[in-house]
Image 1 (cartoon, helix red, strand yellow):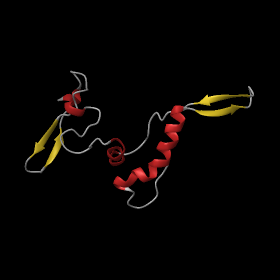
Image 2 (image 1 turned 135 degrees about the horizontal axis):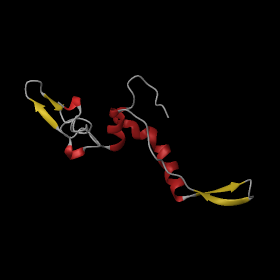
Image 3 (image 1 turned 90 degrees about the horizontal axis):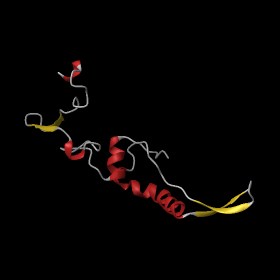
Image 4 (image 1 turned 45 degrees about the horizontal axis):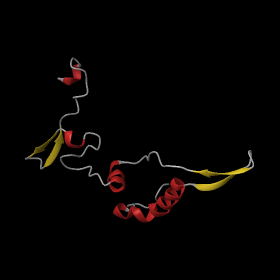
Length: 107
């Protein structure tokens, strides 16, 4: 689903997602469906596995803040961040820690 508009709904995205959430709740519990091939009814169940979105949308959907000291949703409390006093913002300095010990970019 692509939400139209120049500025987007921002924090009011729940208005757009409400019908989707209601359908997902129904599909999680199961919906009686007819199978034409077997000519019998069965309960269809479904779940949402993932969404594709940018970081501002991730903030609205998950509630995880993508700003500040713990901005990385994967690292959480282990995010390597440092406050730059002159720049008045956070700098994320631990991005090289996943490289091999002898990798040239690590130094």
